[in-house]
Image 1 (cartoon, one colour):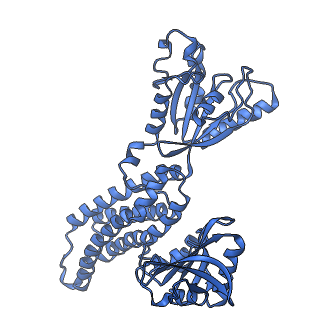
Image 2 (image 1 turned 90 degrees about the horizontal axis):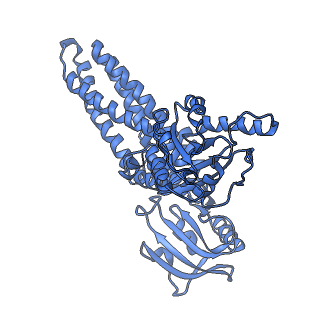
Length: 456
């Protein structure tokens, strides 16, 4: 699949800016740039050292297009592993398009989405999981998603996977050696050692699979539904968390008729807070539609903030149905308006939940609520930089590997023949290899890189 032609694309965001960067990669990247570049010091780019920057002009038949800086990278020491050039020009859309047109006229072609990173993968500069992490890094919108992407780019995840594959490779080599001497009934692969290794791999793969739920919500923002009866202070709390008057606050019950949501980063994690219509019995058709959407938001949420009014003595009796609907969610009980009462003892331990007492109006005890939110997403695990899976393709490959692991364990317990055992071990290696790209095909690569931006 490695192509020998030279590709080019605008690497910076579309539109007008102070500067723009145009990239080239391929065997002729430097010589093609030489055809349209005139150095201020009469230098030929092809004769210059790698990792140097040169000032001059882009010209078209002696007509000056722009003053530019040219950065040179030479194979194999570049992002793609090929000769590469980056042209820094002024951000005019006309200038960008003109330079791109000149490069194409001189022998380059327009790069496809993700083709620079695809070439980096094909040339061995990145494995496939690292290449995918490049896209995640570009798309990261919080400190947590950034940290996970950087860790994966550095190869921590793929190194772990490759070590597991190497250990399995040793065993499958011994098992296949046994098959060559099947007539002599010899055993080269110690089955007890293999079982210990499989148990170790099962534990490691299981942890990675479990981390996907956390990784997925970190990547996309953790949905938090704020629910409760009308006038308990849900909209006030939303505005407090967002530090913005996003929702209308009123003493009139039923003001919020539809879900209102926005995203805010707390300690580097994106939370998507959703203010919902107050839950109550009503004959108002529109309000009932809003209440119906509230229950839909509960279904989609990872965390549910159930708000009670500190003055409501019957609040305990009203949450049974909510607790039932949130059994698979992280439920945080928030008692609001503590500024209106003298004591809070009557709310202690409702449905085994320890209430967090706040005043959204006066911003009292909000730190306790923030801490509870962070604890709900295993914030300490993120800070420890444990490997966290955010990619659906990786999750599917690990799940398939786990099924093959179960077959190997079952085979060891039932003492199946070596050829069947070897086949299941190969399956584990295959699925693990799909993560790093040791085993892949053109269709998979196409699906991955088509989602990249042009120029990367």
